[in-house]
Structure formats: structure tokens, C-alpha cells
Figure (spheres, rainbow, N blue to C red):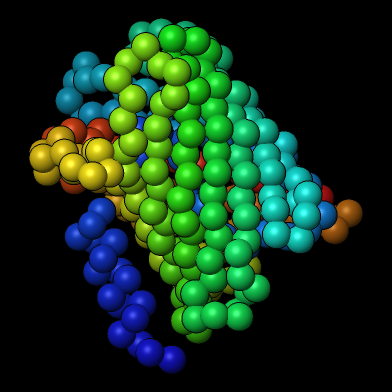
Length: 246
């Protein structure tokens, strides 16, 4: 095993850190399990350390299906809550993930994401997110890197394609408990990045795991505490995802 590769990935996560990543966003992985069904719950909260600072919470409930050997599709209902406001319905989202290579066929597993969203506010039009998904295993380490493009269509506001990234390194200690780091970033327009102070970068520790139930189904979880690296990023973001796979 090339021992320098996981160390390089960790370094990248520390220094690197999509319209903007929401507090409930998670790291996409490229592989698909045909026939798998899942109930998916995601939630997150982001805010500043200053007293009286703005905060935002978000969550979603979804149902997903491995509809084909290389296609996983999932439908979500999303909710949001701003500081001082009530929780409200925000959007319906349709996520599609395509596995482009057999696992282990190439040095890097490759997938592709296509996500469509219809916001509650019809003036926002439709939102599309797409991009390649990459995964590489080194011994007990799993490394993920995703490059995501995002754009609003038929919106009252000017429509621009924005660029974001997701990074993850995970150490497979035990099936029930794995640990690592995650990073999310928003760079601005894909062809003209925003000034560094206006970009969003968040990074922090993460935990992962899976448990089998008595009926041979699986409960999977992952959670992260992310810290903002720029003035445009919330100081702290906590995110959690739980899946019931059957």
C-alpha cells in the first residue's frame, strides 16, 4: 500500500477545504447496490458562535431504490428553519446516482450524480446539480472526492452555474464505528471563482457505522462536526444522516 496517499488526502482535507452547501448535505459515494431499498433521514444545523448570530437548520426524509445494476434513485421531501422562524416545507428533490465502473475494476471507482429539485418558492424555478463522483480504497482507508455543478433554471434571479466540492477520508476501524474527516466547499461561478473571502469552506471530523437488525436489515449512520474556514462560512455546522436499508 502506498502509505503516503492517505496522508496526502488528509492534508488536502485540512487545507482545502455548489449553489451553497446546506447544513444537511452529505458526501455522495459512487457505488450502487441493485435491489436495495432505504428510508433516509438527513438533518443539520449551521450557525455562528456570536451571541444572537444567524442560524439555519435543514432536514429531509426520503425513499430510495437500487432500480438497476448501476442506477440508484431517491425522492426526498426537504424542510428548513431560519433563526426565529418555524420549520417549513422547502422543496421536493429527485436524486439519481449512476455507477460508471465496476467496483475495483479501475484504481478509482467512478460514478455520476444528477439531482433535480423543485423549490417551494416557484419564483426560484428548478435547481439541477450534477457532477462526477470518485472513490479510492487504500487498505483500510476510503477516499472520496466529488466535483459538483449547480444551476437554477426558469428562475426570477440571474441564472449562473456554480461549482462546489466534497471530500472525505474514512478509516474502516470496525463495521459499527469508522472515523475520518469531511470537507464541503462552494467556489462560486464555475468559470470565475469568487474572491477567497466570499467562498465557503467547511471541514471537520466525521464518524460512520452500520448495524444489522434481527431481520437482517441494516441501519447505517454518518455524522460530522464541520468548522468554517472563511468569513462567508458559518462557524460551526453539525450534520447527521441515518438510513434504514432493507
